[in-house]
Image (cartoon, rainbow, N blue to C red):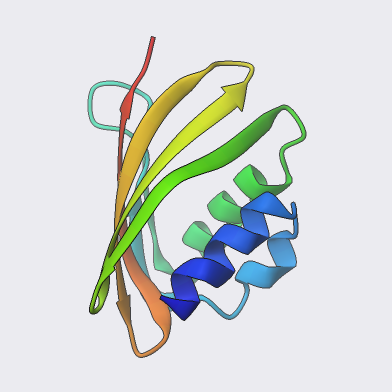
Length: 109
């Protein structure tokens, strides 16, 4: 829960540097676009760069609608507003205090 809270804070505060210590070396992130399967970021550098880009993008804003943590896994419902408005969910897994997996799914226009 602590790692997930820190991750959210980075986005809400537009503080991408807060993500540095949260990403595992072998992290894999699947994004919500482009269709049909979304982008895939693999490894610390790609995941960190991708998330830092999203956290610092002035044209979008994430709102977290609900976060449920079950041990090492979290289900995060969110809304993105800005250039496009849509809702989504991310299934996240944490191991040894680092994010190792984040699978994003969205209802896009």
